[in-house]
Amino acid sequence: MKAELLYEGKAKQVYQAQGESGKLVLSYKNDATAFNGGKKDSFEGKGRLNNEISSLIFNELHAKGIETHFIERLNETEQLVTQTEIIPLEVVVRNIAAGSIPKRLGIEEKTPFEKPMIEFFYKNDELGDPLINDEHALYLSNVTEAEIKEIKELARKINTHLIDIFRSINISLVDFKLEFGRKSGGTIILADEVSPDTCRLWDRTTGENLDKDVFRKGTGDLIEVYEEILKRLEAKA
Ligand code: C5P
Image (cartoon, rainbow, N blue to C red; front, side, top):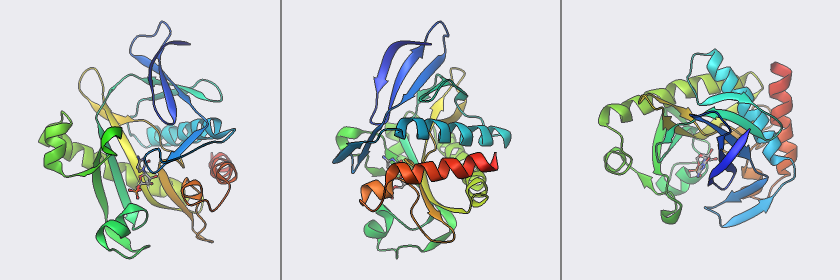
């Protein structure tokens, strides 16, 4: 299924799909990084878990009418997706203050945001993915003002669906990061992944972290918590 390796990121490899123009194979790696590559490790099974979790979530989003690049899961660690031109923006949606925002803006940890807060970070490893505003995005990311508005609207809509999906498995969706891509015709669709690598997920009963924060903070077993997310999603499906 795979042909040429086009790109290797921190968590995935991207291949051209063999004989299928306009399609890519994403291969999920076992590597985990945090703090812009400052902390690194590898966990047997992580690639499989994120591939399976992201596939289930993208299928649920499709069922709710959200267009994404996801076509199908091919095997344990790979999925077939539509090729898009990735817009170099990390679109973060926050429902509850956690992670970088309390430190940056002096907001008390765990404060809920009545209106989910959207932030843009410029996807650029060399610069450490800096926080940017809409004008920077317009200048740096080859998007129009109307597309910035559209990306924010899509991110809010996806947030309401993801909140519902996670609430149904007794999890609070604290925050998450999305990436969007442009299809050949110009339409902007959801790309990349939605997984415990890219979301903050708190158990609604115990408050326990069920995401990459256990690795960032060294507070738990990454594989155990990712298994827990997959188990709950599969039980619901
Ligand atoms: O660190 P911060 O609080 O800004 O992260 C917000 C959300 O975006 C978290 O859910 C985190 O997992 C996700 N994120 C990501 N990739 C990055 C930066 C943040 O998936 N490069």
